[in-house]
Length: 299
Image (cartoon, rainbow, N blue to C red; front, side):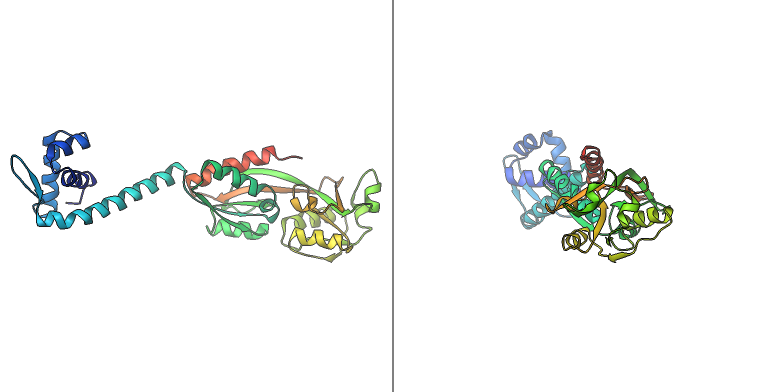
């Protein structure tokens, strides 16, 4: 027979009260029911725990030695139950998220801050990586959800939310590109280009748009991170193309950005999880926060 938490609580209550009647009141039990619990525990342990007569109750030597052991065990189990309830109701746990660096540096910090004001015991593991790595991390279950870019063709990934991000050209203030009424491909290709590296979701959109127009971009530099591309533009190495939502676009007061007037310069974005896998409740709650955040972000 296994140990029963109710029986352990009954034993500790009697030991502390020194009286079955007072212990029964404390536990909201009848005295006969409490007696049954103590007898059941004694049978389980194979030892008498109390010496009792009509006037007093005293721990036996075995009961005295077991009291601190069972008190610690009860405390540990109650903590386990508390933690399990917190995990199941989403009030605690760890959100494991892979996301595009542009999202990690713009919308994500504010979303986490607001979320942890309500649920301060939630922690976050963030992997800010390019889209192809986001997909791999979700597929391999190294993270539970991913915010990725580009079209989702992997059948092992389930899209929880889909949206889009228009691309813009970033150049120094006063650049000739800013003088025209519109900015299209024919204007952009006249100037040196700093493009994010192959394998990034932005580069995939840019390459596809140029290919549809029948030309191929010849970048002067190909950094992985958007902030590096912005720094290179500031240094005069060319102009770059970035998502309008990226905080890097607004990080340099000496630079300006304008949306590209071409239909192909739109980056699909998607919030994904591994198909067939159940998300932790706390992650489900944060997914809702991300979706609402995308709906409220400024255009």
